[in-house]
Length: 178
Image (cartoon, rainbow, N blue to C red; front, side):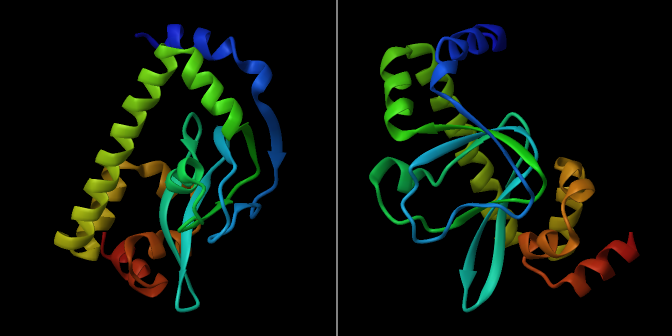
């Protein structure tokens, strides 16, 4: 399966997508709501976050070419464990649950591609989880710098600090040591 064949297959369903231009700081899903849409990012950046004792915690970022929804909420109609928010002015394409299911049923090629994306996302989350357990904040920052430099270039420092599990002051110290 090539990128071109997948894109051609998705093109067959383009009529089901709704394009939206949204400003930065647009909340697409609030923690506790049921996800009714999946978002495909054409341009911009979205973040996943949750509230812990009144503190906003960022735990993942998504960029151009990636898709995001609250998977367990979208699939099982359960309240979302997190919020989805744009960090930059963005262009997104949305699909409803019904249309998403229709595409999966109609296209084994897309179903296979989405299964692979799901596995890749699981592996990414596993790496993030292990990094949080075994690495120091400085090691996590170095890993981020090496593996995801676009995050450091595009994301405000306080979100990066939250993502790394440290304060903005600690992040500044780490950056100054490098």
